Length: 487
Image (tube, rainbow, N blue to C red; front, top):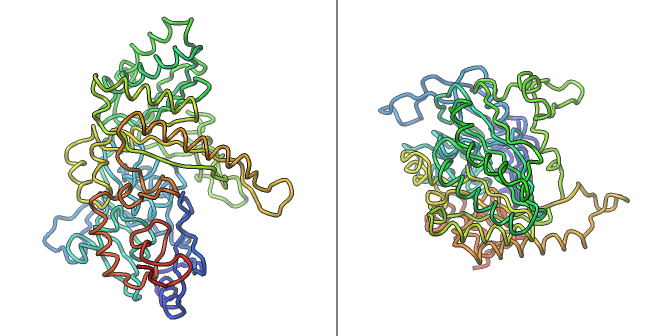
């Protein structure tokens, strides 16, 4: 059903409970685990709940002794571009959200939430001040630090569609710097030996110049011995950002027999307030975004052009692993470089430096520890992601049917690459929002020591397992085909 209000969600919950139907929820549909799917279920689609309201003096319900905060109310169907354009574009503030513009706010926050600037602003879930949530008995609760604090904690990284249906979130807004920026480029190594050396140099570059609160995003290492660099930064000038890369850039230039830039290393600084302004980006960063050109669409709607391939993609495999900060110590970097070299020669391996809070500000690490995610995130400097997929497929449609042989081959290589990476270095679990569908150790991977506490919250608010998602808290106690308790 399409929900347009909290009352609609309540009606859906009561209907599903009465008729013994699984209840699943979908916002924008970005779940790699397919959590908006369950057999014999009723799907509640919150897409139309798109109200955005900025508040200058928000006080959570039942918290009358707390100081008012600047905040934003976001309906469950809001996606991050809408939030950024309202909070940053119109109010010159910032709200910690996702890097991809079409990701939904509700699922992102409930999964923990890392964005491009998480090294500075911390975990998305840590910015949650209050959630309006419909629980399995049809009640509408306002969960915050003062009332229903156990449910509030569980919603901060315990997984979407698990403890109830969130209909509205109130998130803290933050100060906005003068500038955001990006450094991008592509380097080709000409031999295997040169490629291994390049990986080591990039690890040194990160550890010595970028391992701090200002830098985030990713480097992608490819079997073709190419490295794609897309690093975003917070609040730095053009000169400071350029200087951070100058010695590395010169090293590449000084070794033409081993390397060349396919795309020159480029530093681009933008006014932070214009970072999600479609007209500004089209003018100053041509090719970066793609507009929504459907008839009647808002001309301000856009997505990043390099995300186009993700629209309806057929995933062959997807896995992630936290990388602990000890790997950046001088005596350990060679192990990381060897493991990255080995895995990336099998399959493309991405290192996402903004996903993991080591190097972040102490207050952001403390806030993350008050969330439900695996505490290992506070000691991880990055998340390794190894994944792959193909074009959209449609069973029974000639010319568009899935190539299962190709998919199986790719999945095998993805598993091999991640196994190789993990064999070479210590890793500490994976990120719920971006993880392996087939992870047998999912409870430890996603939540670590927090799992037992989450299971207790699930039992309290959804004792009959109305909300069932793959590898969600409590799912091990219920049959995937119905309401039968299995242990």
